[in-house]
Length: 325
Image (cartoon, rainbow, N blue to C red; front, side, top):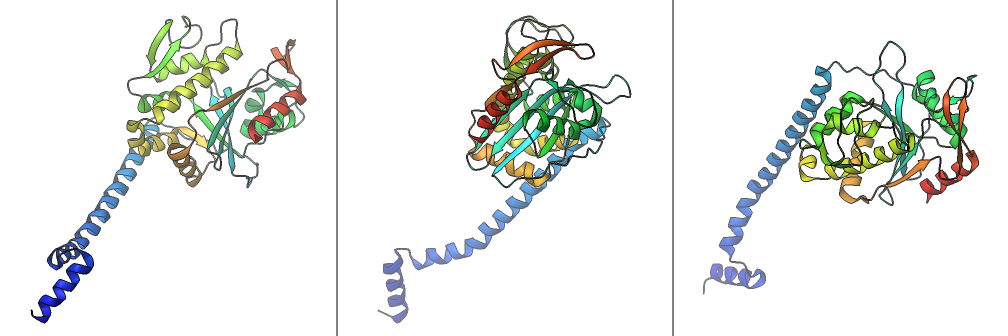
């Protein structure tokens, strides 16, 4: 046996792979690496193009955001707290109202997503020399910063960030997330002051219909029913967001959101939170409605109309236990 044959024989015994096959594999490696690089480049191009196409949707609709001051400081407790506001359409040049007030918290360590829905009719002390008004009046008087101060004053909540979603943006994002509609069980016929007519029963609601469903309050439940429906809508959208189609469309959705949602959240925090929740987050969203049961009375104020007078200490305790658990 020649020395070359002996060497090949020894090599085969050690690796179990014929030497010729090993040479072929070595030659293929550069092509595999090149393929991976090309795939990553293609993915980057897809993300960039999709993001810009989503951003263009809001640009084409003339959306420009007013920059709001927001002086909350970030905390290093492994959680992020965002004041999420639904902004009503303006009918004149005045500051728009907020139709919904939510604190959305994501815990990076426990992977929990929690939502505190704050009733807009809570009779509140508003800092800055204002008289007492409903909670949502703080937004009309001084934007998200005054509302943040009002939340601290009355409920000991100090969110780090804000995100304002206007009605047009909500409708656009829903139609992109769920082109076939979001399945919702409409518990009764609804039409008064919501811009659409909804019939009782199980329906797939488009963006405009889903917004109308979330805003309805003209029944015995009043604002409590509206808050319950808003939480129901958030849960329905969560299911759609976690579908394969929505994950594929994530860059475009991010572009639409960045264009329509006025927020001081930076891109890095948005991507970090979204990726963490989609990949590992607990998909059972926990919710709390404030004021909590047994902690309020219905009252009437000369200027504000019907209001909710609350036991502040009881609600502060409930919020702290819910968010810090």
